[in-house]
Image 1: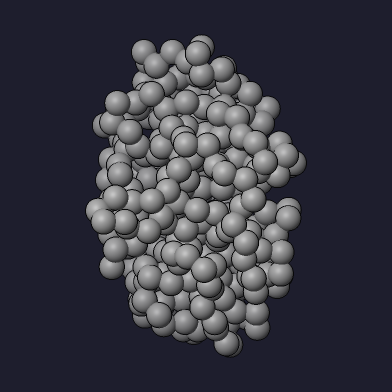
Image 2: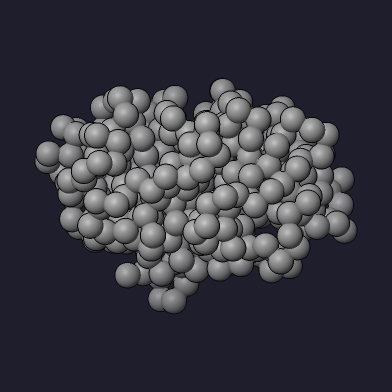
Length: 327
């Protein structure tokens, strides 16, 4: 249960810490508060888009599409409009609380509600429709809709799939809680508390993902292949730095990222690709690499005394970061 406990700890509370960042760590002024930022120029400049949200808000998740922001929090879901100079935020009509994830969908975004399944946004009415009335495990942790409309829901008891838009569900993996999912045209990878599992036949058969070190807690798709983020091993009470392994054959073989990560990325939590740039989040901030990971530059610095980390989101060419307080 270690990995699951770790992820739940990540989502405890939020502490605000800045309003705008120029991309130069020496120019960062953290006198004002903020926890949600956007960059439309590959991390060179950042804009605080969280102004207007309740000060006591504890955000958990974020998604953006079509000029609309969706921020999940312990108190519910908030929707913001990016079409005005200052983002206008309103409480969503969704009544559920503890929105642990907001994910893209072909018909509208999905909101995952802790212990209460997930809901689909109905653009015409502005209402949210439950998608899991027939799902036996309502404790959904993560969600992916594939290009051909197949839904994959990672829950506490395993991985479920629906080919009829949530009318019926089938369990395809029962190896413990599924916390992270990767779905591509060639491979399906589910990360549990203790292992990561891979299928190349749409979930009919599974094999364990073996990088030669700790099991990945997250696997992401890059231009060059797949990247597995692995928690550093516990060495006599001291935890070693997290590691990143790369695969160019859909997870059949893995090799460590060929260049050492900066010390500020020793606890790397997320990695994503935006155009030709890689972005990574660590406890010291956000880093960018324009040479496929050979060198890294910090583009957003974390000077908060309480530590914390960042969640990264990429949507429609814009990069978003959500600051999370926790260990």
